[in-house]
Amino acid sequence: MYNQIHAAATFIREKLNLKADEPAGRIGVILGSGLGPFADKVSVNTKENAISYHDIPGFPTSSVVGHRSQFMRGLVEGHQVLIMQGRVHRYEGYNAAQVAFPAQVLIALGARAVILTNASGAIHNNFNVGDLMLMSDHINLTGDNPLLGANDLRLGPRFFDMSECYTPALRDLAKHLAATLHIPLQEGVYAGVLGPSYETPAEIRAFRTLGADAVGMSTIFEAIAAHHGGAEVLGISCLTNKAAGLSAQKLSHDDVTVIANQASDRLSSLLLHLIPELAKRYEQHD
Image 1 (cartoon, rainbow, N blue to C red):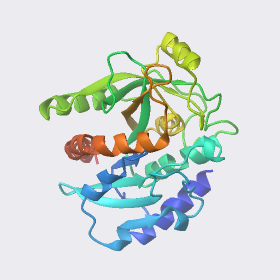
Image 2: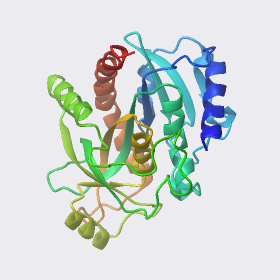
Image 3: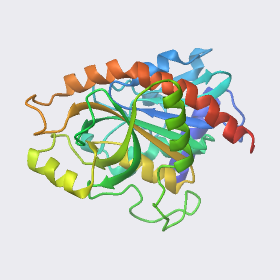
């Protein structure tokens, strides 16, 4: 896996005309369903800074509507940011390691922080459709893990602590900026499931009992792999619907995408203010 990750990173560096050891950017962002419009607000100077997943060696390609399957490198207030427009999911037939692969490539390209966004269903009674939720923790209900099998110490340790997978300092910064920008920002625990079927009402009641505030079909594997690789991690969910049994409305991916697109302006505003602050944080230590 190490060789595959670095082959993909080398290909991207060559496309960007970067030296072998030159960081492509200190901040990496993976955009979930319907949240791709953020990338349109980032300055991209040349066409070489946008690369199709199809062209990157070993890179998985999404089959889901709302995921553009494009890698981008852009500027936010003069700071380089790496953006994955779309992700793949376990339910598409990829294994957990393949789903986590892009996050590991971001780290190989020099990312010190990985920001993970997703569309999810609200379980908490006080959370509303269209809210953004900062992920304070997660419950892995997939029965899978991207690090199964032999461990390569070049990627991270065999056993590692998950007490603070979602970096507290990054969460504090996000909350501060959201308050300054008057963007409502919930905080809670994300339950990750396999999909592609939406959950049953009974499952949602069980997840609530377990302590989940939102549920979705992504993010878990990328968060585990990024944390394993030593990156700081921030997770932000767009709550696109009430989870099954909590409203009379039937769940559909079309509705999820519509709500995510509507919320993307708030998410974009938060990210556009957050990324420069994070970049300064890492540049001081370079």
